Image (cartoon, rainbow, N blue to C red):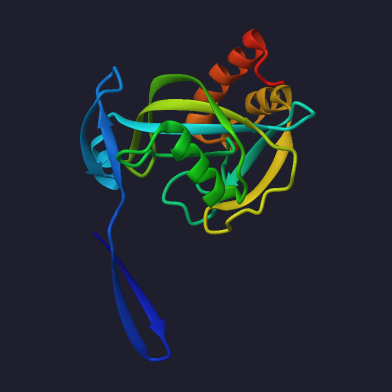
Length: 193
């Protein structure tokens, strides 16, 4: 459980929120259980996740800067959106839901590939995910949710690749891992167009 305190005037109000579960999986992406998100990250247990890349008609990728109050990787740049599937939700359903929640628009998504990675953070949490990577196309302006996203911009895949070499500290740990695989995929299979 997560407890929030809201102060209005001189009164204190306490709210109890249920923490979302992540789907624990084995290396074959078979569901083996559910666990609260923070506990799974504290224990570094393998769980299902997804990453969405949105590209426009110019072949540019929409990247987002994470909100400053995020519990890990605040204000770092990353792919268009990413999160965890809910129990019973398909990968595509999850990607479309989170894209709408974070970036404020809807578009069709296609799954490209999946892989397992592990990335520890300075705060003691570890991302250990079987990540499903998806692509979609959109050329409009997002309506970002400022609770989730500080900023956004379009960059060509080559610009991202070059900037990661010169300024790797600006990017999330998982994005650096995922982007190499995404870049190779769009280069070999021409899925960016």
